[in-house]
Amino acid sequence: MIYIYYACMSSLLQIRNVPEEDRRVLKARAAERGESLNSYLLALINREVSRPTVGEVLARAALRTERADVSASDIIAAGRAERDEQLRSRSAR
Image 1 (cartoon, rainbow, N blue to C red):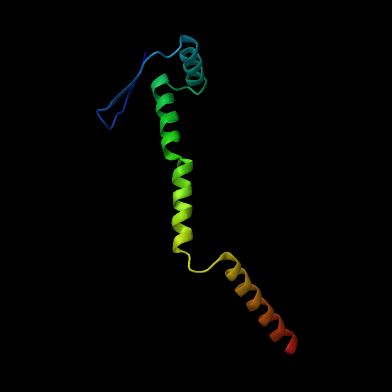
Image 2 (spheres, rainbow, N blue to C red; image 1 turned 45 degrees about the vertical axis):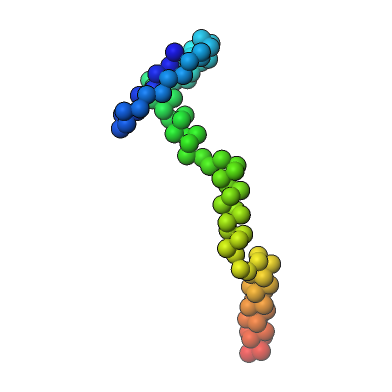
């Protein structure tokens, strides 16, 4: 059984039925990093929860698309037109 205590919170996370071989691998990986099993597992959990899910990424992309009143092709076309105007004014000198 693996127990994880959060220092700043009074929460306890208990994971049951962890295969012994998996526990040994995790403990060895923690030792390789000079960490306790507890701190190693907390780091794993923190990394996992800090990454957005695919659904969250897609939802943010959808919000950006809804908010965008100018398409990417319009922005590119405007940039090219501005560049062309600058080139014309330089060549006219």
